[in-house]
Image 1 (cartoon, rainbow, N blue to C red):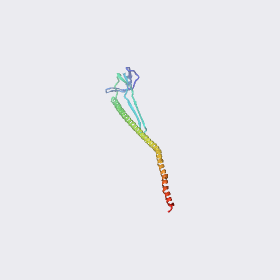
Image 2: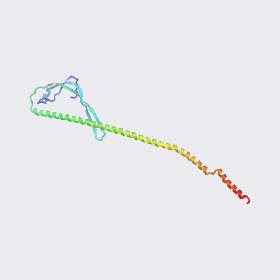
Image 3: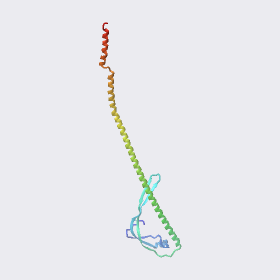
Length: 211
């Protein structure tokens, strides 16, 4: 039962709600008031863990909680009752008691099934969270790879532009060197002019000579 404020080994008197002795069932309030039940506190302990999971669809709402109830284990040491005259309709009372017992058993089964369903849902939630975390890690790795590729491409473009800038001054110097011999070739050499002038003078001398 739920935890009682008694130390271990102490005796406790409990309220009597129903007396059942085989086929004999006593549920009369006056008779139950005369009966007494004495128990001894064996130990205090915590019950099994109950998992509470709340989930709302498409609301990004997930809440997972656990709970362990504080309990006390009792040892019934004495049950005392005063004999009373048999009452009518004991069969009806026994049938009610059996119905109550059946209902309690059904409720206990339903509670166990709900706890199992909650545990299964909690396991599914953990699996989904693990999958989501793995996807996030993969996406982060892909983004890092893309950023590295973009950085490499930018470095290559910058290196190519620097190489092109360095090559332009060399090309200008080569073009200047090629242009100077052409200009020199266009101008007539002084030696060649002198050779051309010699035959013209000899022709004039021949013409001026007497016949």
